[in-house]
Amino acid sequence: MANVESPAGLILDIRHSTFDTGIMQCPICKIPVDIATAGKEGSTFPFCSDRCRTIDLARWLDGKYQIPVLPDDESHAGDGEPDER
Image (cartoon, rainbow, N blue to C red; front, top):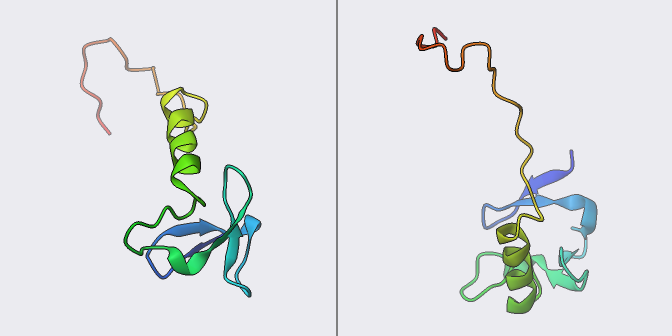
């Protein structure tokens, strides 16, 4: 399994972390980030800084990241009949 739940309730991708040392890499710049900072006031976790958090947000807003979506079942689309699922 590649994901675990942190003490703060966040799901972490452990492929880029070493939990024995409590350190993971910032997803943007790969600088080490202490996992113990998760959930603390003012924390930028899982990022190392506000700058990296802002870069990540900008990538989402620019559409550079996308969540894969399966195509809708169009067999009933537009026929005016309610879907009987």
